[in-house]
Length: 372
Image (cartoon, rainbow, N blue to C red; front, side, top):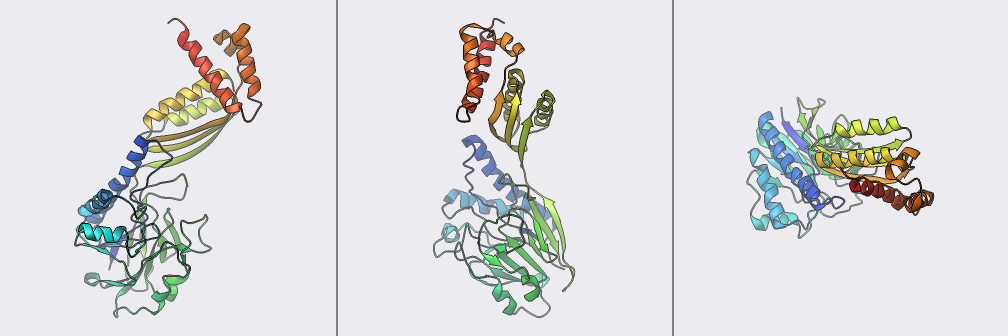
């Protein structure tokens, strides 16, 4: 009764260019930490192997140090690791895998499958039919050969591949490498372990995407898992358990400010976030100056609590009230004219963002200039 962990799309070496250097460094490090967590799960669960269905590395040009660190992160599980090149780390003539071989850093229990073929796990009578990508993009189904591939009598048949099952996924997938939705059936597979889609997803009872182990984009497609798969018997439906392993939770919020209670609700939601959260926040609408300042303060406080934060407030208009103007001392005189001009500029789409920012800065300067 074979039992294994199915994982994929580690994308080790991802740069996270949309974040500042400190945030990006933490997000990149989390990918190593979660690999170590997978190794620990494999040991705790006493599985027979860990199958990694492609895109172990994000690109061929990762540094030697990154390569060494990745293979070092596998030390927590002494059993077999079966690794498949995907579209980001395809098995080219010269690749990240050939560099790893020259570095002599691939542990003896790690099998990197660089050519199509069968890998036998003899202790559990399981044959792994492997279809590594030998180029970044293919137009032929690399799993088609599975239909004619012979395996020892009585052995379980498990496919391992990286690509897109056409017509199944709800959004565009990373690569164009096609895989037939019926492959598990036509190739008589007990299970087909796939990579490329970054969320865990069941194509059918025997065909699964594991998804990326550590979320890497603002998309709600169930990333941050590995799959614990048990094959109870030949021809039986496999048992698949999704196990959460990801460190960070990526959130995308689009907030509309219409009434003061909307500001209070947003502040409460932000207050609930913590160091495991990565947030992309978009705020639009219209509010008075005091409420806009409250939103800005809540955002700044949140930035200090969460792991990473991206904020877009270009569509939030600031409309000072009489009380706001009184607090600024801007009911008349030169300062009053400046505020009026900034309010007018917010009607111009090309100037609205700068005008709102200027109003907030003006309020901050006035507040700081007052005697304590």
